[in-house]
Length: 96
Image (cartoon, rainbow, N blue to C red):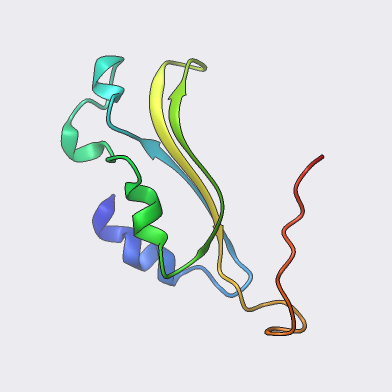
């Protein structure tokens, strides 16, 4: 719900993580929700967190299961909780 985004972002504590998934434009072609007011435009989720959180991962695309849907997904962190804040670049370990 877009009007709640500023409150949601403010609630992420230093070192906290936001994981968010919602429906995107294109979903009206495969099912509900189909109301354009509930479907995000390309990059809209990225724009919502820009300047507030550091994006660690973002996806914008189509998933076939568990049911067909167009989605945007984001994982972002609020920096500032590392023991030596400002003493280097935070390290976000990736699998592999």
